[in-house]
Length: 429
Image 1 (tube, helix red, strand yellow):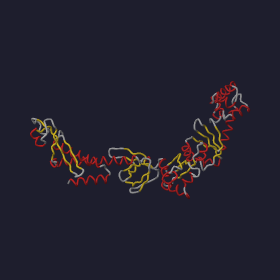
Image 2 (tube, rainbow, N blue to C red):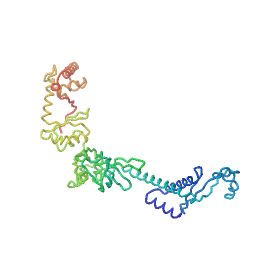
Image 3 (cartoon, rainbow, N blue to C red):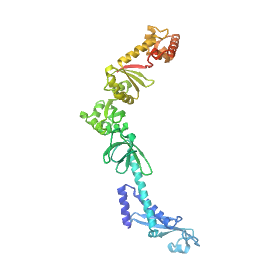
C-alpha cells in the first residue's frame, strides 16, 4: 500500500503538473483533519511521509505528567518511560497511532481535502500559465454559445468571448475551431477566467506579427492600428532597414500574407499605410486611395483641413465617412475633408469678411491674409502679440483692428464673420 501511494503521488504529479511537495502536504493535512474529526479538535497531531518507502506515520503528542487528569492530552510518567526511558515530566511525547482507526467518515473527509487541494493547485497552475499569455493569439473549440458570450474550450480551461468582443455578423457553432486574442486573465474562485477578443486592434497586430517574419524580427514596426471590425482596418507600418519595404513585407508575394489575415477576419478589408513622422504626410497616406491636394494644420487643436479635388471627395470620405474616420483615428488628429470648390468658396468668404471689418481696405486685408488670418472671426479671436508678429502693424492700429473685428463678430452673422478656422500652417500634399 505504501508503494502504491508513492506511485499514485508520482503519477498525479506527472499527469497534472502539480508539485509533489504540494500533494504530500495535502495528504498530511487531510490525515490530520481526519484524525481530529475522529478523536476531537484538541488532538495534537503530526503526520510524516517517507518518500523512499511511501509510508505515512501519524503521531499523537501527549504531555508527560505525574498525575493524569486528561488522558486524551496527557500520559503518566510511568507509561511514558515504557515508550522512552529518558522522558521526564513536562516532556511532549509522540505516540504512534493506527491510521486505520480513523474510520470511514474521517477517511472520506481526508479524500475531500486532498481533492480540493488538487483542484486549487490545478487552478493556480492554469492561471499562472495563461496570465503570461495575455496579448497572444490562441486556438480553441467552441463549446457552447450563451447569451453572455461564446464559451471556448482551451483544453486545460475554458475561455469567454463576450458579445462586445465578437465581430458583427460572425456566427460560430458548437465544435467549430476559433482563433482569438487573449485580452485578459482573471483569477476567480471556480478557476481562471480567460477573456478573448476578435475585435481588438491588437488582434490584427498580432495576426501580422504571426504572418510577417519581418515584424516578429522587429525589422518592420507596427506604429498604429484603427479598426471597424468586420468591415475595414488601417494599419501603419515603418521599417528599421532602408532596404526593406514595410508595406511590401506585410502584403507578401502576390498578396499572400495579407490575404491569409483577411481570410482569418472573414473578408475584413485591410489598408496597409506607410507611417510618417509628419502628421500631414501621414494623413495623406492614411486617406489613400484618395489623392490629397493640400492640408491646413492647426497644431493647437490637433486638427487639420484636408483639401481634395471635387472628384476625390467621396473617395476620401469613404462610405458613411469610414475612410476619413479610420484615418483620423490612425493619425490621432481630427480630420475635416473639403473639396477644392468648397474650400475656395470658404476662403473667398473669409477674405470678404476681412474687408467688412471697419477701417480695413485691400492693403490691410492682404496683409492679414498673408499673416495667416483668413476671416474676421480669426482676427477677433487673436491677441495683440500674435497680430503684431504676423502683420507688423502698429500697436494702435492692431488694437483698433481687434476691437472692430470683435464688434463685427458679436453683432453680425456667421457668413459676415467668415469661416471660424484658425490656421497655423498650410502644406502642399
